[in-house]
Structures are given as structure tokens and as C-alpha cells.
Length: 419
Image (tube, rainbow, N blue to C red; front, side, top):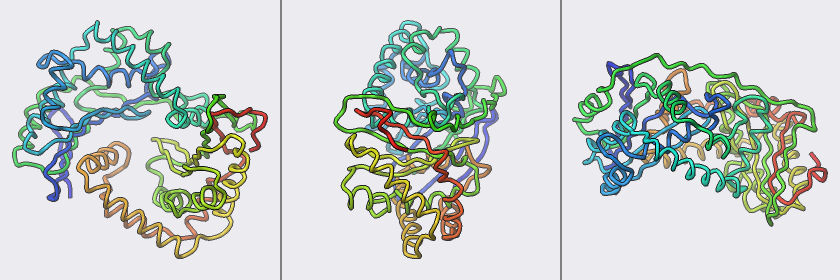
């Protein structure tokens, strides 16, 4: 079980103890990401994430800050999405106070030195170029541009080099101050929780008063035009392998069909015995990697199928994928498939949650996106209740081929793609 309480500054704290580990993970998440940004500042959430590692009033430089974490043998990083930004450190539980101290110091007292800010622009631009040059890392961005054309969910999380180079310091600080208030923090510590942990959290994270009420307002998500000519995006790139994703409008985080979608996805493309894996890879030899997945947001979401394959096999793969989607909608899944998918999900979740960092992430995302915290066992109970009829109904609702978006990066001509 977990414990939830609030600090006087309205920061939400979740403690998730479990006995089978000597580590503890501290994860701090804020409900802000690229969909909250004005167009002029596209990518600024990601830029701010970088700057939190550039020294604090107490630890004056990047070297002093990272050296103190590195000496613990800790794992640490940060991440930015379209709706969240998170910072974490995982360490031996003996260093719990140091972990709490460093995380709070970064988030409350980072310097945002003007020279460091200018220097870091170059780092971020190179990161963007790295993603741009790697189709496997960039294909989901291309798909989301097609799916969500016309709203901020279509924007690149990191912005563009043009955006990054144009940031003004005062605008960056104003955006940080607007969203990085203690009242917006979700603080999760998972793993070996020592008796003094509450005192340390109160001392370090409770020291900063809440200065404002953070707005949760964002531009509503919407899907782009459904005309066929607008549903295909091809980025020509002379690679031996093309990356392809097919996407369908789907559902938000809180939608009640989420457990059904999890089982459907497992049967369709979630394992090496899934329908897509067997048909695309094993029987036809068209791809090495083929998988399906779900990307929910607060008010909208999508389902996708991804494959990496030789450009000449694009159309064969699209035909095969569409056939499998139509079968899922037309005929009930078998009892064996249904039972195996449920045990697959249970086993995978059990293995995943043996790690304190994954425990922390589970509870942080539940706290941010759901109407209540669902424990792993409650989630598995929902999975167990899914029926073949539920899956068929959801497949018919989701796999509407006249709304399918296609994104391709590779040596492919747009006019040659049959979809």
C-alpha cells in the first residue's frame, strides 16, 4: 500500500514502501509539458529541464551537483513529455536525506545563470538533431504531427532549433515560475522508506511556500483533418530501412476502456506471440521490429502500430496490418488468446514493479492523470474482467480505416504509398 499526504505548501506526497529492495527512488513530477507552451516558447519545458542540472545556490556548478550524485552510485535523470516534466534519483536508501536534499535544491534553487543558459541552447539543439537523424526515435513525432495537426499536441516536445535559439531569459524564467510552484508538485518516494523520510521531506520540500495557484488550463486536443490526402506524412530519407507508424484516434487517460485496450494491444502487437508479430515478422519476414501500443493524453489519445522494414515492403505491410485490424474487429479473440494476454500483463507488471523507480513512476502518473490512485492489484482486477466481447466492441470503435494516419521516414515516394 501507499501513503498520501500534503505538505503545508500544498505539495502532494506519496510514500510507497516495499521490503524487497535496499534502494529508494525519489521522483518529482510537474503537470507541465509542451502542450502548455505558447508557440513562441515551444520546447521551453524541455529546456528548463536541462537547466535544472546546471548548478544551484548551494552547489554552484554542474560538476559540483553531478559529482555529489555520482559519488553515491545513483541513477538519475529527468524527462519531458507533452503533459509532464519529471526529475528522479534512485540510490541506496542509506543516502535518503542526500537524495531529498539534492532534488529539492535543484527544483527550488537552480541558478539559471545567463551564460549557462546560452551555452545549453547549443546542447539542446544537438539533442534535437540527434532525434531528427534517427528515424526510430523520430517516427512517433511525425505520426503525432499527422494525428493532431492544428493543436499543440502536434508540436515537437523539444521545439525546433529556431525556437530554442530564440528564447529570452526573462520569458524562460516567467514560464518556470508559472508552473514550478510547490502546490503543483507530485512527490513520490518508493522503495526502502526509512522512518526519518517524512521529516526530511518536510524539511527540504516543505521549506518553500506556495506563491501562486498553478493553472491546469491547456488547449483542448483535437484530431487533424480526416481527408485522405492529409492522413499521410512521408519524410524522405535515404536509409536502407524505413520506419512506419499507423495511427488511429483513441482514448484519454481516464477513459473506462483503458483496461480493455491493454488486453487488445497485448493480443494484437504486444509480444513475440502477438498476431502482428507472427504475421509480419514470422510468416512474411517483412520486419525485424513490429509492435503496437497506446498513447493517451488528458483529453484525447491514439493507438499505433509501428514497423521497421525495407521501403519496397511498405505496401505489403500496410495490407497485412489492415487485415489483422479488421479480423480483430470482426471475430472474437479466442479463449486462449484472452487468458494468455491477461497472464502476460500480470507477469510483466509484476516484474516491472520490482524496481523502485518503476513503482515511483506508476504512482506519480496515477496521481497526475487519474481521478483516483489505482493500485497494481486494482488495475489487474480490471484486466481480469475484460471479455472477448469488450475487445471486439473496442476494435470496431477504434480501427476505422478512414481515419487511419500513416507516417513514414525512409527512401519512399509519397505517391507510391497505398493506404
